[in-house]
Image 1 (cartoon, rainbow, N blue to C red):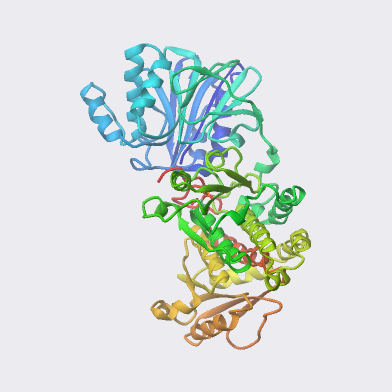
Image 2: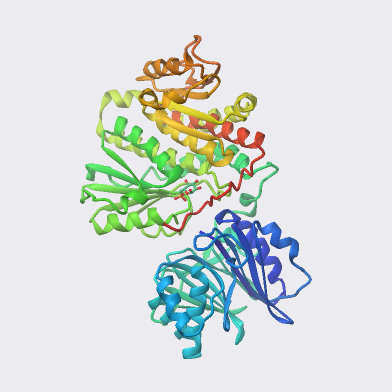
Length: 601
Ligand code: G6P
């Protein structure tokens, strides 16, 4: 993962741009941070373990600089310490890198034989030494980079400063994201556009295998043969406000509250063009969804909806598993990738494999122009805007919404009258959904009370069946990732096959029963844990609401169109996770060991 940023200009403001950019990229990793910049005394490198704030405290912002590169790290090779932090310098070159050089061990041995003394455990220092070796061989950066791309295997977005030439900033991209920001007498490189949005909204996306030579007023791009090429300039569609906290204490809370607006925006987009961006689903006998983390959980909700209302089998594949298993794919299978970032390495690779197997591909993606978006046949964007909190909320909901839209469209063409009656008025209900969601978000005291009752427990269980089980998985992940409270999601009927032995007096169990067809079965399972002392929080809808002594707390949610119900039901789970993490004093937006964009296997 990691985030990189670079600046070359005439306004002597490199330090501000680098630190500001890194702060926006901190969601990509926060094990250590560092910058390299050219001041009147030459090259300076400063790095610190931990958060960017640690680095910022040590920086003298009076230093004037027109050229610099910066990095925020999510450690892969070598522990998170100062020596392993970027930038790395070897000979005349200083670099920052996002990605993994897969053949670094073999390269390291060769470079050592050539006399390079490497200090860190990182693959990045090896990449730096290799670039330096090649640069010395040719005395030409373009030729050095061209050779580097042939030799180095894996993924890399790299920013380079060369001691012989402080008038140029170099950038290389292969399988890791990198954009070039275009300013007035100043140019930038960054892992994403929001990192430099303070300064410019105009940018160029580098493609895999390309590299750039950048001055304050010129950008030259080269393909893998080192031939000069041109790219269109794009304009970022979003504002600075989209990436601020807007008065909320945390990005996560802000993003939870943005959900009604996100649902509206995404719905409007697809309603306005009458769903004509959707693939023709009648061509396919099966849908395979590939995704990771919460995106995979969104896929599970989609599977339930598409199978029930669209009557097409849907397989859910964890992208990292899909990559290495025997596949049964053919042209009758549509493979859909779901990804907020559009950069998740396993999901991207899964899509490439699907294409090699002759499948059509589609992507439900939030970040425009991202790698997955550029690799699928059909792009279905979600309109969640930039999501900063590591734990996804609004992007997850937009993914579920799009899957509901897909299920509706498949159902509509199936002419199954019974199913169509059940989801009757979908379009109107979709338009009204933001109001229902807003009402829930306006009344959050209940979730604070629940959090007060459970925040100091050691374990918590989520149980449900069918689509409720899919929600349990997301609710449980949300809670554990930001509060560090151990939590597990179980198919309600499965708990008694072993795990019920962990249920003791006071253990919180969130029992979700919102599906008409199976809620009575789930309630029986809830009774099983209640009778063993569990502290039960029963979540249901107004139409299924039951009274009794099988729960301690009850959350009753408004009933909406069955295709949209999961979007209502997830809100309490997100809010409970948030409130529990807050009570436990956790770093909600940047939980330990995690990163938002997982660009490594
Ligand atoms: C990380 C994030 C999760 C996300 C997953 C997949 O683990 O912390 O929130 O669901 O990656 O990311 P993607 O960008 O592909 O949706």
